[in-house]
Each structure stands twice: as C-alpha cells, then as structure tokens.
Length: 143
Image 1 (cartoon, rainbow, N blue to C red):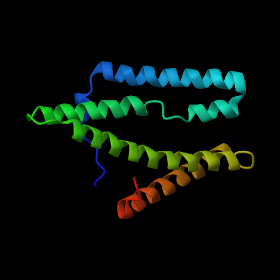
Image 2 (cartoon, rainbow, N blue to C red):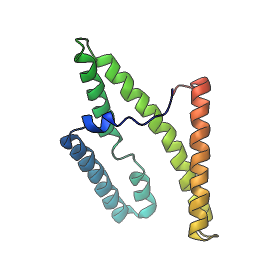
Image 3 (cartoon, rainbow, N blue to C red):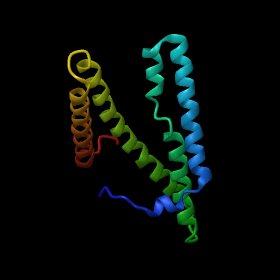
Image 4 (tube, one colour):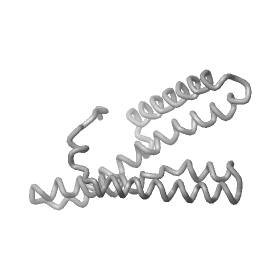
C-alpha cells in the first residue's frame, strides 16, 4: 500500500460531516474535562487520549466507500466496512506512536528543557510509527 494524499476525499466531504466530527470531538473533550475536574488530571488525561474523531471518521469513510460502489450499481456494504477497518488499523498504529510521544514527554519533561523534550518525543513518535507500519506491512500481525 502506498501512502498518498487524495484531495478528492476533501471535496467529497460535506460541511455537515465536518460538523459531526467537530461536535463529537468537542463532546469527548468536554467529558474528559469534567472527568479531570472530578478525578484529577491524570485520570482525565486518559480519557482525553481517546481518539475523539475516530468513530465519526470511521462511519464517514464507510459511508463514502459504500456510496462510491453503489454509484456503479453494486452493493458497497463490504467495501465500506473494509475501508473503515483499514482506517482503524491505521489509527491503531498512530496510537502506538502517540504512546511513545507521551511516555517520552512524561519521563523527560522534569529533567530537560521543553524544546528538547518535544524534539525527542516527536522523534520517538516517528520512529515507533514508522517501525509499526513496516512490521504491519511485512507480516500483518492482525492489523
């Protein structure tokens, strides 16, 4: 699979779909803030780490792929589900990278300047994300 940017998907997305993502992300962030207010920032941060727009994005990907297949006169249910599943696998790999970023920042911030920690955490994110992508590409491992 080649990683590429397709601007056509931006044109296919309607304003209402962007609003759905925005509202869902805002609600998740609000709930994380309320949890943090009640139970402290460490617990609230766990909930803020929830990929706020993933559920909305997965459903929109499924819908767009299904509609694309149906325009050719075929049932697009299977294609839509497959596309959403592939997006979920990518989100999983991205979460691994974010865990590396967070762990690096958490461990290094008390000891080093912020700018240096951010560079290190970004490099950790990139290294783990790229490694996970290559491992997935070579062997699959369920992703």
